[in-house]
Image (cartoon, rainbow, N blue to C red):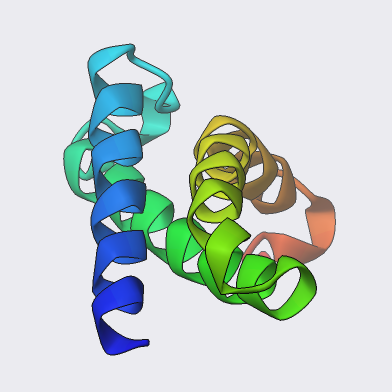
Length: 94
């Protein structure tokens, strides 16, 4: 399972790099976007692989990792920026 976990991390990182090449990162991430998207993809790929293995079995863990990494990289930055724009997430004015 260690080899599969490394494979899922690599799949997610590649998906994140492809998303960076497609400029899917928010403009607020200009400085750290090239690091954040592959990291987000790697985390989504690893979680997707483990979830896919638990639900579908070891054979279908890798395709699940790929699809969850794609969805995580496509929707993750939007969700993070949406959460950061909420009033309760902002620093209090003193």
